[in-house]
Length: 301
Image 1: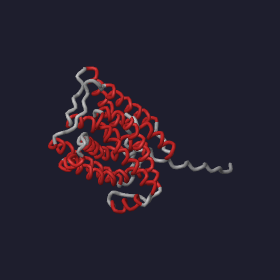
Image 2: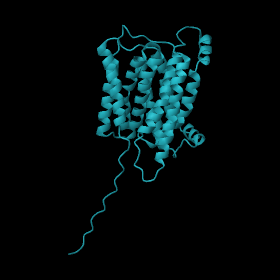
Image 3: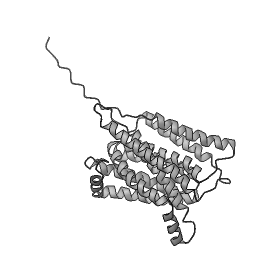
Image 4: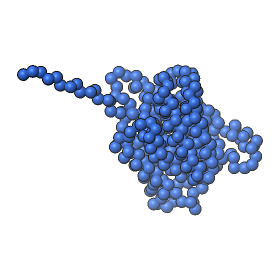
């Protein structure tokens, strides 16, 4: 629990620091990844944010060794409240009433998932079949990259409404969902004391290669999206997709059984369905800024 709460603080703080750093940089784009990396690596504020996110990933390894996947995701998503508060305080971003209701509904959905846990019956799985991991992760990565490219093409259209970033958040959330499954897989190899044997076993698994792919593409995609969209919207969408992806497919691939009790099973399924419904109902566009109304000229009678 302590590691999960620490991961929440690190993730929220890291995203806010990166957003503040990106606001002071020239426009970045995924079509020029070398320039993007050169710009962000020259910003000490961005480096501080990325180090915080990296420490959050390390804390996540500890969480996955001790908690079931669904329980871990429920705690991780609770960090969205901290993120919204930091975004309002440090970035000056204001959420709409609709978005605040959506955030409350997401927290209620994840609370249902947490209440569905049974400490005496839930088990923490350590391994998953490699073919199943590839079967789940490769199409997810392709879908995330395709969705991001589609959002980029729509963003280039003339006379478009300002995007809220939902499509970007879903695309990056799919990549980070695969990354989360890979972190879960890596955590299962560090239960014993044989560090050398664990390292060789990890290198023979698909997890380090999935982490390299999601790390490279996720870094470039997330920074371009974070610069042009509000952190208070894109990060909650990304986090919700990542958590749902990890909770559902992680439970399936690592063989962590669903609750046997009908009430607990109903809570878990209802919470998942509510989170998906809220995600689909999120606004796709920000309101375009209204032009100032010119003062009415007074004419003599």
